[in-house]
Length: 301
Image (tube, rainbow, N blue to C red):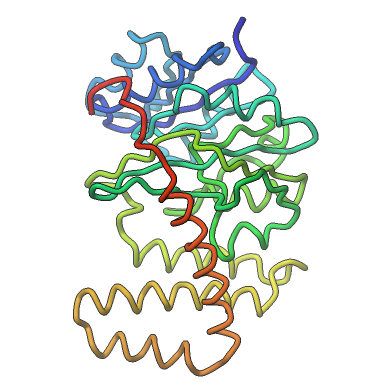
């Protein structure tokens, strides 16, 4: 018997990667999801054909609508009350659904963490604690860091539709959705790794400067909401400044590094925000030290 989850995979020119994503969803144990929907966002390669041959339902856009638009098409087409998200370049671990599905009751969404490999080291992305944590406020999604990585999320379809789906942020559309979802109900962040986040050339998330700028713009767009205080915005800006400082040091941009350091040291509250961020990252590193290597891929990259 299948698990009543519709898996939505947006894809654009991913003929070389889509097979791995689809197979990892269909290989869930002990039961697969009810359906896997691949939204081919007007690819010029064989993305749709590869996914269809593996057993996915394929919906093709005649014009490219971006990742947010592709996810929305999949959510609208889903037959199940719960929707699981998987990016075309990521890969679910075999026990992902079996781990988070029993924990969904009473929540708007439930999410697993991710594993990724950086050099010879396996690292965690997402929730740093050892036990599940209930997220009640959108503020907990934006600082010290987002504990809900998109390919680990299963969410209620009715809430996604009520919120008119994902909005077309170039980066951070998923975080924007979880912020709005948390205003409708709780999100359960789970510590168990649910998927492998594969790093490769061409990812938008590889542009760290763009990611930082868009995160701050996203948070500032909620200014005026009770949870989005000026203090929270400054905390997010402090994390951005720290990461920009580290990038400037690596590139030997002395003037940029001094500018970021001067801004951070101008107020004690900014340094306090960094302490919270450092603790978050330390906890993730502690988990990393105990992590096993990611399971072998279900298909070649």
